[in-house]
Length: 160
Image 1 (cartoon, rainbow, N blue to C red):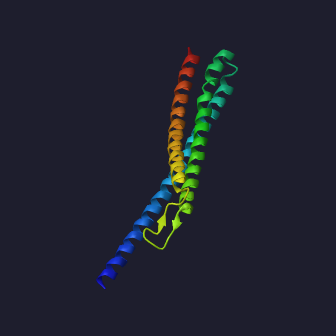
Image 2: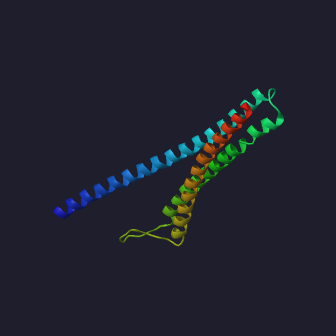
Image 3: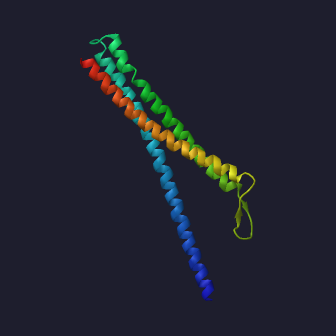
């Protein structure tokens, strides 16, 4: 009887931990999606701001001076591209994580779920996609910073 009570208490604790872990994974995925979308938005907004700036100074400066500022757009475009790559890799991470779950063989004996034929492959691809998503997201942020520094130096050159 005491064993049954302990087993039920352990099952409740396991279920609570599983639910806690699931909620944290879900929050992490949602936070990551939001962060990647913001990176894309910020890079796109910066590119639009540079284009707007160029349109306002176009009549006042030479074509060579405009091209110095315009060349900074490539950093923001690269940042948008890296952000889109990161979103794609995040999607692939989620897809292959789901494939891990469906690839497990369910049994009636402990541990009740065993790796299937493709489980290890899905785990490996999911990890690679996750790492690529993180790296592409970091690259997007760094490209934004480099782009802003490039715009700053180009504007300083326009003032001389």
